[in-house]
Image 1 (cartoon, rainbow, N blue to C red):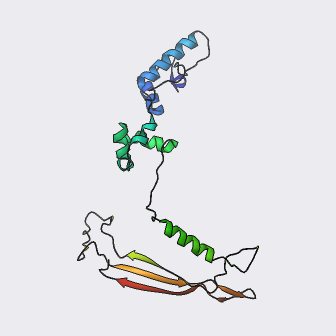
Image 2: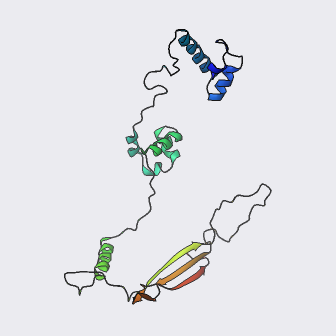
Image 3: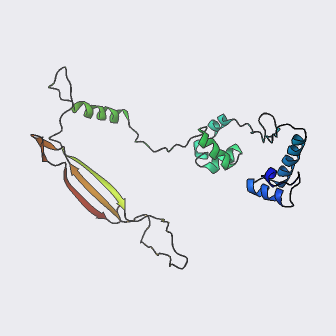
Length: 218
């Protein structure tokens, strides 16, 4: 751009500023490159405007031993803010470590505590589901004479909900007698295995679904 706009090796007053804005660099960088280019042209050598910095340039990364994270209790590293505070680094750096795979998020859910008696009972139930009449070729029972039942709870509202409103729109008012006893809706489903005869389904899977509204129940 500078070679095209120059006149006898001279630039206009605003040429360097225009080129700096065009490429998003400082005006001093454009002036320095133009000065270097003129010297190279004067000596009849190819114009090279590459950076003269050798090797890896720029700010060097500050080393951090991530193994010290193991010594921090789990309760004290549940959020990015907690980890940032304990390691003494910025939250953006934590985000970069997550993106690079040096750290990872994990959602831990509570599992049921099983005693030895509980484990034996579950194992016995699994063994009882094996058809004992098939000696040498054990298989699970066909479950055609079993009915399965399960329920699912749904809260009709939450303690706190977020809405997006217009500036002049009225804020919604929600109220209940006790926020710890929000009305719930339960779906109770009963189902069984489908049955086929000559490739045609003669018995559907779902038997019935009940819905029950529960108020102020523990």
